[in-house]
Length: 118
Length: 109
Image (cartoon, rainbow over all chains, first blue to last red; front, side):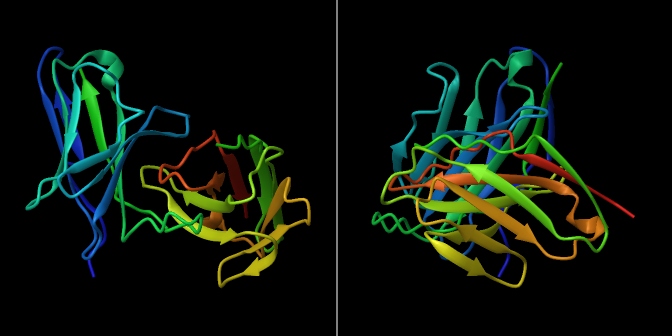
């Protein structure tokens, strides 16, 4: 059973360009989460999606950032008109379900995409 | 979500037991205590989760006192490959994980 896949692993963009980050969850997982990590910091939650639905986007910047998880295909995190401050590692995680009872479903993380904005 | 406090860094030598303590004074009744490990240039990896008392798996033990306001991750006989950042998280009904800055463990030969 393959783990969470992310591509590309490294992405270089110039200011003003668009960045598209892809995440394929583990087989059987219907919940996807995106996190951003700046150097020497912990991960910061961005968005939580289920198939075709955004459940929680409280960590997403209001502008330029969007995410989707279509019925078919990977989840996409899209950053428009990138700026130098967007340079970071972006991690995707997946889980089979969220029980909603307080019992925690482990999140499985991918290797990340390291975005560098020149 | 409860805020956690843990040491910024710790040093150890191979073969020693390492205990990392985490404070979570505002933990709620439904919250679980969860620890993740992150190696450089990799995504975090789940280590262990507990609600109260003691939990043990093949990697670590987690000790949680009765008041649940703190917890201790215990790594027995660490090796160089245990050098990593360890995050203590309190997880409740919300799906998202709130990471602090973690504890950077350095294991020396």
